[in-house]
Image (cartoon, rainbow, N blue to C red; front, top):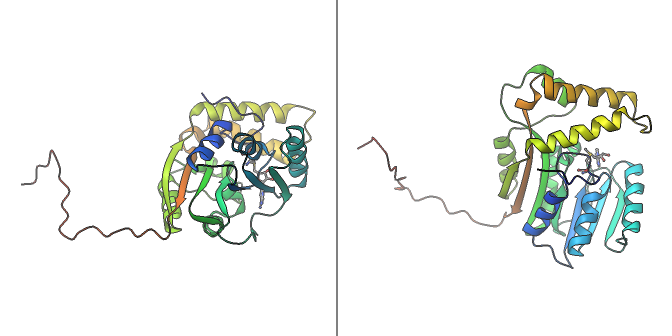
Length: 258
Ligand SMILES: C[S@@+](CC[C@H](N)C(=O)[O-])C[C@H]1O[C@@H](n2cnc3c(N)ncnc32)[C@H](O)[C@@H]1O
């Protein structure tokens, strides 16, 4: 059961972030970049657990200010830098990071194709990209589901298309999983509470679109068409993959071909 959401704004949670850090082998002197950090929960979790250095940004100054205060209150300010930035413009140089974290659909927001290519540039050779993103789990996604999730703006891939995109940018997927149903239930329950609460200052537009998404997920087949993809991919650009020998035959234990 995924119930450890803390302060995340998407299905997932702290256990995924920590798993990414463990697979990436983060140490004290490791450098991490987080794209679209939201409320700063993942950046703080990595800094707290691995004592590494995390740079985390979001396009929304309110999120960044909130995250900074959180880091200060947890005594993590020396390990995490939060700043305002548009992820479509990641001008941070080349080959600098040990882990790039793109949770909560970050790559969808910044433009997935360009975003993955830029992540490959930013990473050191042999290091990791950890992502969580919405995907379609079938090709024939009903139109009402597409409308609710795409909002006329976003585009989603299937798992196989996502894997191909990563591979074509020199990544090798070392672990991948779909988040369990409980992650969606927990996330939508939390969002429903938030949009219904009078204390939250979400716009009417956001409240309406979230209510529509929840309705479509549970009542109009969204549950059978969308999934949340978690993948950790290692940048293996320089690794030469040997072509298979020409006379390779795959042994089929129950082959009827003689
Ligand atoms: C669904 S939230 C996920 C936040 C966080 N990663 C999490 O998992 O809790 C998406 C975040 O993306 C940010 N965002 C949207 N477009 C962005 C962009 N072009 N550059 C940077 N951040 C962006 C939003 O401000 C928001 O905080």
